[in-house]
Length: 212
Figure 1 (cartoon, rainbow, N blue to C red):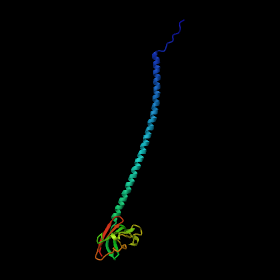
Figure 2: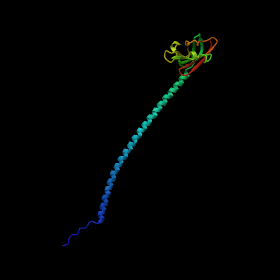
Figure 3: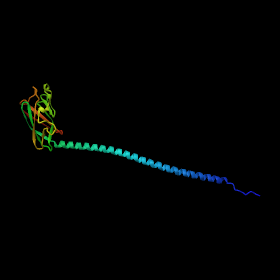
Figure 4: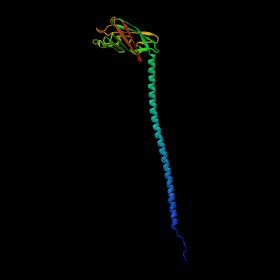
């Protein structure tokens, strides 16, 4: 009795199966890798956006702070210029005693005037030069009288920019009397010309001269 014939699997059939199996595995691997790459690309994109936004916020904050500083400086400059333009005054007259001078000031500006410094000198600065401010009267010449004296006893009213300091309203005049510091070489002499230079709080000046 002859044994039944069983066809043996061909080499090509086995090779086909192996190739198909390998192809399926590669396809699954590619799908997994694509998913992983997709997640990685999304994560990278989100991180890039976050870094860009953070950098942008930092740059914007810096630019804004610089802009605020520029605006503040500009407003201060404009305000200072406006005050300087509004501040105007003249000295129409002075009167003397041997140890004091009264200075009359007229406000022809657009704002109340206050004054930070007043210089009296003459007939030259080498002969007599005294600078008054809110704190002191400073004698620069003559050399024997050089030094400082408290302004409180020599200025009526006081120089400065306090509410109680000497001030002149718009279209009004006012006067301030300065007494010479006590020193044998300091006095106003008849026939000599003396000069007065006054400084306003915003930088304007006025100069006046008159013979005693």
